Length: 270
Image (tube, rainbow, N blue to C red; front, side, top):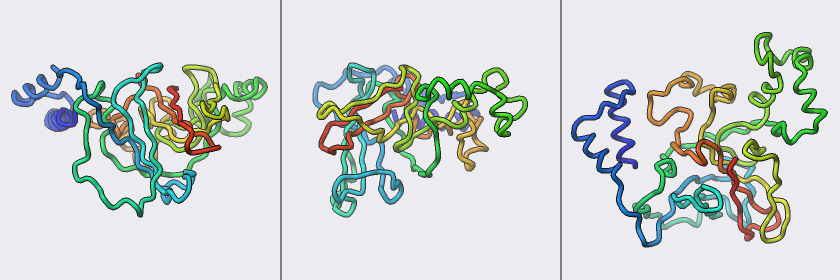
């Protein structure tokens, strides 16, 4: 998968996004696309995220841990079509024996389950809950354009027919990868997640997103990426530097139990 990505990137740079392969490149891509039998032996998990508490104070590690490592199996696992994830809380200072060549799976089910290495630039933002989590009275207020205009929030020609979408796109659940925050409901109504071990309500830990923004949420694009917001000829897409897609374009949100780090975490597609 990584070899094919490099070939596509080189072809795109030569032909401005038309992906015109050389004969040698086309032969390699054809061999990759032909695939091979899935392995019968255990499959190595792939690293998905490595987060330090020094960069993301919102993380609440157990004990003396200051590092969270997230891995997943690059195959769908029932009952939902999503990778199975594993969380490892560690102490960075205790990590001394680092593999120069980490193990990789012999096969993956989808290319979208192979994260492209990239650096995170964490920043703290304010977001508000999905409108589905608000009372009917508040939802009605959000749908009244006069409330937004009196506050000077909505430009005259924006969100004329559906002012509540201004809240949904510009203020509520932020897109992209994030620690904590609110849930992007849509596939289902709001559904609190409960710990399978103690039945306590779980907290969102990490959202693994299929994109950092889309056409409706461009106001969330970081300032340093504004110049690339409409660029789709590069590989990876500026809106998806990790080249990950989950659930056909949705997000995978991981939940943990606040009562004990030993309780199993859960994952939700939304």
